[in-house]
Image (cartoon, rainbow, N blue to C red; front, top):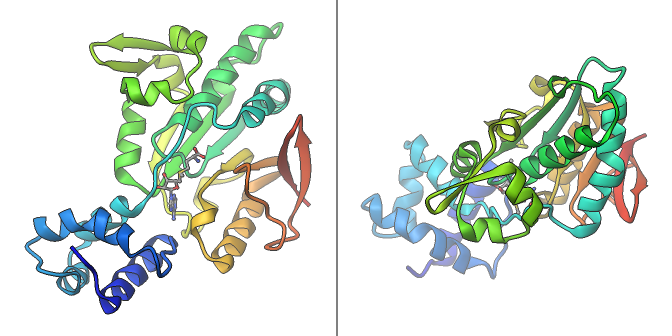
Amino acid sequence: MAITKEEFDLIRHFINDRSGIQINPGKEYLIENRLTVLLVQNGCENFVQLHAKLQTDASLGTKVIDAMTTNETLWFRDDSFAAALSDHVIPALVKKARTAPQVRIWSSACSTGQEPYSIAMILLEELKKVDSPPPVGKFSILATDLSPSAIVLASSGRYSQLAISRGMRPEFLERYFKKNGMVYEVAPDIRNLVKFQQFNLMSPFKEHGLFDFLLCRNVLIYFSDELKRQIYGKIHDSLNKDGLLAIGASESPRGYTNAFQQAMMGSAAMYRPT
Ligand SMILES: C[S@@+](CC[C@H](N)C(=O)[O-])C[C@H]1O[C@@H](n2cnc3c(N)ncnc32)[C@H](O)[C@@H]1O
């Protein structure tokens, strides 16, 4: 359904207020493509009526935001990032677990779970490699996302052939998945390492406590500069002094905050709080 300028502004401001996601002029098609079904299902004739309904219908609001999130993700996303995890980040966390009571990881825009499960698999591989490994119970991975449907899929740990074909390594598929009909199911030892929860990055982070490794990858790109600044600040305050931040390969905190210094992990840039 074609959207007018007035309707576009109403809906994009609603989305921005609730999620931080910016939809700039020129992206009218995004709202038309992703929300027309919801508009029709809810008996609305146009986007003004949909916007009016959004003022009183909280569950419709959740569905609109869910539809507007872009959940694009891959297993072991970016080769240099995956190598940094296997060769540097996870070995250092395993070393830390020998003395620290707990090692905490947060995948803060986890989409459908590929990111936290990839970390869990690399962690179990590392624990198999080292002598007298620390107990797996010392590690916890919190995985959160705004999108309720992404969290439901992630928590199920069940993936289609198409999802698996996007980056899964054959040896990990063999070791950590069971095929059940058309579906690949994550092994319980991987599934049990990850706790999924719906969470909006616009909210205060305090409830989650402090982390040793925090991932906020490929999500800040959707936000305004001001919101990026605020979220970098909250991430800084959520990291232990020796904690580490991973953002997307094309992202950088430079220009938004001085709260981090770059730390090269192999050929991948990551960040430590200053
Ligand atoms: C492109 S995916 C990135 C997934 C994963 N981090 C990766 O790099 O493969 C972006 C994710 O950010 C989530 N997202 C968007 N706005 C958010 C917000 N305000 N709070 C939390 N998550 C959000 C989306 O639902 C989506 O799953």
